[in-house]
Length: 492
Image 1 (cartoon, rainbow, N blue to C red):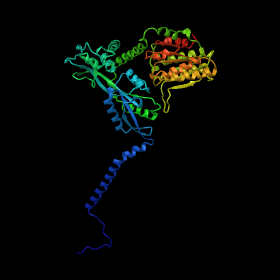
Image 2 (cartoon, rainbow, N blue to C red):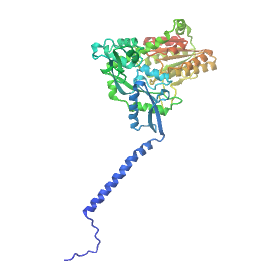
Image 3 (spheres, rainbow, N blue to C red):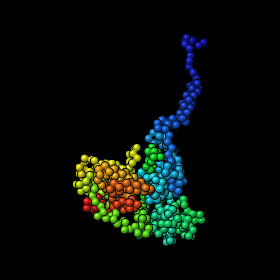
Image 4 (cartoon, rainbow, N blue to C red):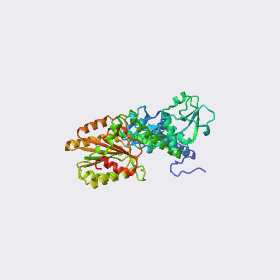
């Protein structure tokens, strides 16, 4: 029987046709997503970079150079965006033009390197992020490097104070005094000089063992590699140093930080701090004793008379450290200043500044002009202002001192009255050229403006600045701080 037509066109497709169409649709979708994948990343990234591309330079210490390259490469692989800039980090030999400094050095040696480049760290050393660690140990020509054999170890402090301190602490049962003695004994030794002298056991890290020496690791002791964020300068912009800080925070290695934190590392750090302090304190005393009589009048109470006074208060992170009586140095000093203000203010004008380093976006100076000589604040309000400060950053003391002395000089000329700047500090992070300080003090002398320096705590002293001041004194016990501040303010 024939098939009857219903008058409608038959559009029915076979199952095979549907399968082919489905495959084509899937293929098109895959191609679209593939094209978007190879082009989309750059489009997405670029959409975040409203401020454009920014290349930042990262310096490194000689011992950390190869590790620094790895850190920079890993950071760039993250395609970082900082303040609407697409960041590319690249290595540089010039610390002066760098946005950050990757170093395996001790706090003191790293700070010295930064200062010599006329730069300043943006954070206290305790806040430098650890991004890697290196093994430390003994380079030896002997087969037996067991601990009982290590009785005559050479510590090349001049090359690697950090590794030297770590190994010395480990071999001396974490004795801070014994570690410091080892550092002092070999303070001028380098790896090369130790090899030349035929030393059998030389402290090194895993990257610096000399030829023909075998490296043996000291277990449970590692040398940290840290990122030092730097402050902005006239040639290194704020956005660039922010990117440098981002490198440190992005690449921080928690596991490395744990490895580098131990009783031994704490003993090594304390020994290094004492070693650095003694080394810096000894420097001005090395010439012939002839200048000694000149130093005495500087600290003599009779040489200080009261005047219009600007208190310049270091509020860096170092002030947050505990003093000998358990209070922080900040608590001790702020209360001492609050106590001295009404004594000075009874007859003279009082101003108050605090300083550390730039802590906010766009800020390039580390000091804050909190209370001027022309302020209508009461003595009690000024004292409460000092007590209300917070701590952070590093002490850019010389820059703040220059600004304070210049301000006091300007006020003295305007008022026709002598003035005094009383600096209370934990130390100086911006060591280097003293010419700006010298020039400011020279102009101040003509206007009858004097500088008093009170160094509190056991940190490294700025001996050059203290010597340049008309009066200076070091205070290491909390109970004596108020008396010394009052004495060097001319009211005791």
